[in-house]
Amino acid sequence: MTSETRPASGTNYTLRAGPATVVVASLAAALRSYEYGGVALTETWGDADIPAGGGGILLAPWPNRVADGRWTLHGKEQRLDITEPSKGNAIHGLLRNTGYRAVEVGESRVVLDAEIFPQHGYPFHLVHRATYELTEEQLTVTQELSNLSADPAPFALGAHPYLKISDVPTEELTLTLLAEEVFEADDRSIPTGRAAVSGQHDLRNGRRIGDIRFDSAFTGLALVDGRHEHVLSAPDGRRVTLWADAAFAYAHVYISTIYPGVGKAVAIEPMTAPADALNSGEGLQWLTPGASFSARWGILPRLG
Image 1 (tube, one colour):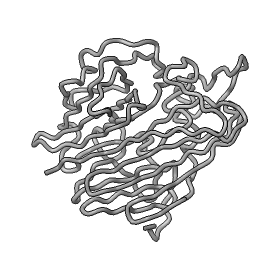
Image 2: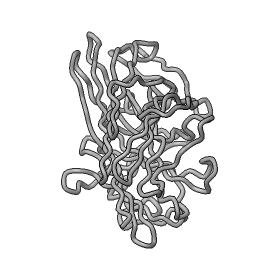
Image 3: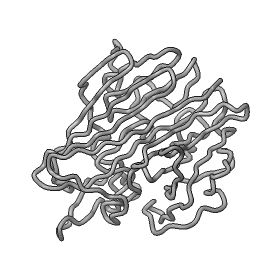
Image 4: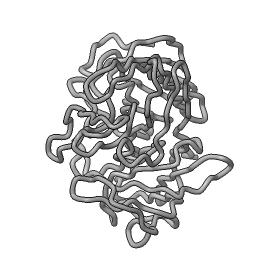
């Protein structure tokens, strides 16, 4: 069902299933909110605003950053627009400021898509499709990328949701992430290498959000029944899990102290490749002409 108002984030689509409600914005196909029984599970933003800190947006054809906005394709340098001027990077793909169109709208399901046209720095024509499906148990998001170009196109996918349990200060929540390695990065947030997790980056046994602060990518993720699970839990045992297909072999965790209206906010970002993959090649995949790639992630609340 579509809302009557026209927020700055475009048309908003409200999905309902039992006690669960999800709002998806057409801008960047962003997850604007997810509530279960009146408990907010994600950070949100106002009608006059666009997603703060990339909140809830989907990322294609790359997640995170490309250093200097430059990479090399078949021996020729490509120059992307610099969309993170403070660090001199191109950030979060090419659809952050794009309005997706509705392909299918139902009571508990919405399908949106947007085209990536050939442009300076990325000479390929792709379609990114996002399917949000809500049940009484969980939210599932399927991201699909199709190549309309005549040549193979390099890509990676990601998403940028901020999780919470609304009646508990985020500082008091515990994050558990079953990762063996963390990416070291320079002052521009570009990876310089890997290290075994230690100190505040060792989240395997859980760490209180109030005790950590970083903006880091992880890999060596454990599989639980064929998928990755990243868990945010409250002191009373309630929890919300961000799960992702094995294709999302990387997870970026951003502990924000500047998210509007809250003390701390935590983004848990499933990614098929880490930052600067167009240069490093790590996790980067190539989509042949006419081919498609899809992968799923979702949010599973356990509040009982």
